[in-house]
Image (cartoon, rainbow, N blue to C red; front, side, top):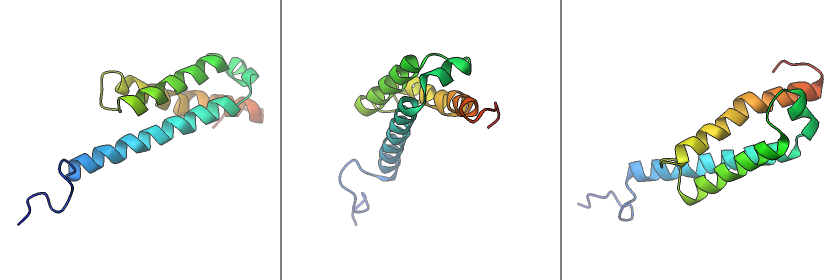
Length: 104
C-alpha cells in the first residue's frame, strides 16, 4: 500500500491545503491591487486614508511578496495583513465617499 495516497512526493493533504491557501491569498492581493488602482485618488484623501499611490504601492508590494515568498513567511504575514487592512478598512471608506455617504 502506498503511504502517500497517490499524491506526488511532498504533496500530502497539508501541502495541498497550504498551496491552495497561497494561491487564494495571491488572488486576493491582486484583487486589492486592481481595486486600489481603479478608485479615484480624491476618494482616499476625502476618506482620511493614505494617498492612492501609497495604497497601490502597498498592495503591489504585498502581491510581489506573496508571489515570491508565500504567506507563511516573515514578510508574507505582514503582506497578508496589509491586503486585509486595505479590503476591510480603506476600500469601504473610499467606496462610501464615492457614493456620497460614509457607510458600508
